[in-house]
Image (cartoon, rainbow, N blue to C red; front, side):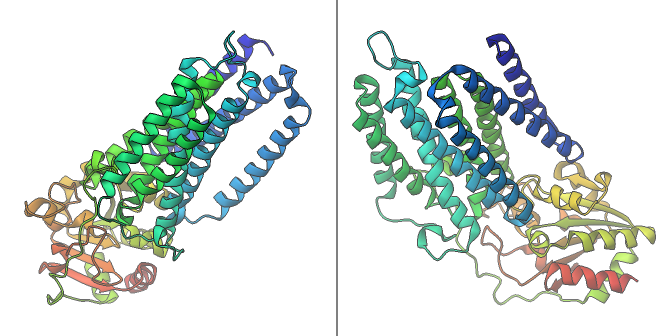
Length: 477
């Protein structure tokens, strides 16, 4: 394969990746976007494999079969995990994948530093060029932080491990920010020394310190903000890959890494806006930014709410002219989307106009709820984003809130002193009647009481979302 042909194939793969991102921006085109992404990755892998075979290096002997074994093993594990993972566990799977990308970047950087001649980047003086040294230092730094940080994020999202580092509660201690800042300065000093001297020992210290820093900047961030952290680490993994791509002189890796890095950064910013978080505070979590965790509230402990049954709710729903459904994480955990689809079909059969209102961070990550509803084959025209459907709440007869909390809390708009003041919410409180399904009166991620639950026009139904929705289906019949 000539250099022109390989460049052309890498260009085609890059275009596929760009089309993949474009397709994934909307549920209707998400499947096509996935096809583009898989096609682009297949082209990139095959092109790289052919180039390795043509290189005439020792990789053709003992090393190349290991590459094939790695591809087959990794592909098999990835396919198995993707087939078995529940949608509610998708963020932790993403965190696990990011950790592997970061680790791969570190391993490649170590290989280049230990044997630069094998990668053809030595100067006539048998030294690594200064530009490559900078790229290797940054690639190893970002990759190591991504790996260890993603491991901690995975543990916090999973909630299955008793080790304190993996608990959802933030870990904070006196002098934490100063320690992390000093560690960062030490890493930068090691990086500068490596760039200046090319000493292997300084590169090793840099990488080990970066692994520690990745842990320390994630542990002070609470589980509520882990989806934002995962998105941020996604961006880190992309930049790590792009940095290593420069050292390998691989345009495909540079383009793919840059796309992942930039899209992850944009997604992190969008999520922070939707959750009323400071992007830089989350980004710098353990380096001096303010904690993004809000203390729990007990102000509603002695307040009463109006409770009802599934029969009461069914009567309200089937006698309404318009209904807006607000799905939340509780719906996702209960996997109630199929029963909900059946309920909306029965309501539509009785002449009720039904719409779905989706908050940008409904579920655990952007698009999470859209995928769940698409899995249940909910028509796309019934699903509306927050900015499109908010004007409709004031003219809606009944709003059905299923497992959502903070995203419908009116304190974000009515209480300037609230910790979530300014957070964009769905205006469910403006509707004529409200039905809320929750397991209990426990606070949401923000740790605040929700004034929506105490309104005179709100009726609470406690219980598992799937069981409650199935009872609603029977009651509507």
